[in-house]
Length: 76
Image 1 (cartoon, helix red, strand yellow):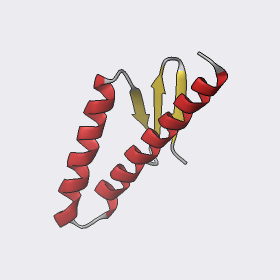
Image 2: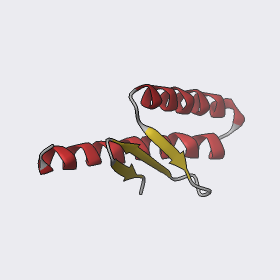
Image 3: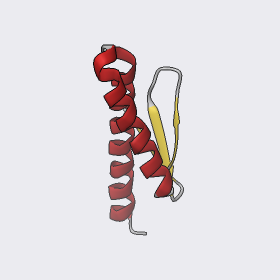
């Protein structure tokens, strides 16, 4: 893998982590009427990324870190 490919992959992993954190924030902070929609999106994202071979974890503050091919990305 070239350095550019590695950087592109890491940037993609950061975007995945940001997207998961955003959905999780919605689950935790919106009214009940909209919470289910955020939870469905979050669960769908998690399943999709797991099918793609992406491992992930969420810390106690709700921030996500994702792992693929020995690389990782994390939400800001």
